[in-house]
Length: 329
Image 1: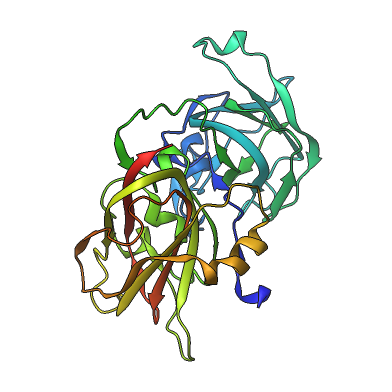
Image 2: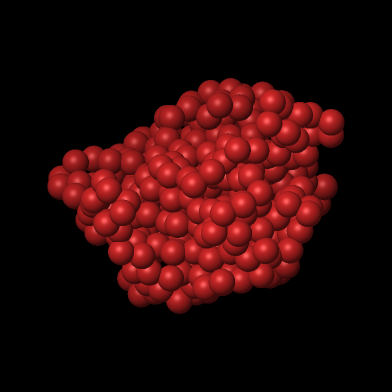
């Protein structure tokens, strides 16, 4: 059973641009733009493609350093948060990757980067060509800025900063809000499949750009159904539920149902998945249609307090966005 489950443990990439994260400083990006390092897409290699400065590379690449020191860049996180895991990807950099990397972080409201007080998040680590380098961190602090150091120069395709958005600054009052908003800290805990599109996409703001900007599972050839579990913002007075199948025309799910629960204590992702089959029904099995925003009125758990939701799709397919409106607690 566990082999079929993808556990994200509520972690999201805090460096992704749709959260508002951006590169605000770099020492050098002569060969490849620093902003590419936080591109959510998988890095690609384009054979024989050159620009005015040399070989086009899908990532950040500095020139060969001929002076003392090392290159680095600084990312301002769109949403401050804690970071549990880091992925430094040198995909397609072979012979031009850095010798070593390190990562620092800070929490600052200042605009002048010279006054930032950096804390080591990942100490100096050796890097390999064309490889994923995954490092766990022990810090529980909330950070606003990240500094990637490369020694002495070279290229990195992608930097992923997996963590949790800080919910301390969220002040919703008595407003009815979308409890499943990625921007406010909602996240996916686990899902059984995300072959064509990541489950996290359904929590993103705005309308999906295309099918790749939604959650899509592979074609099911056995019995059963696909599902995901999300950790929502704690709320009650659930009013309206929106399930969008925009761009999914021949591959939308036939039906969808929802379950929900309030779990007051911190539980492991595996125990949450195991208990989810017994959660209350938030929405009975309901038909879906192609390329449409479906709006439902909640009638089953209107006064229940919730912080976890399970979305079941039958038998498989894709949905682009999910929103559930209630009062944050």
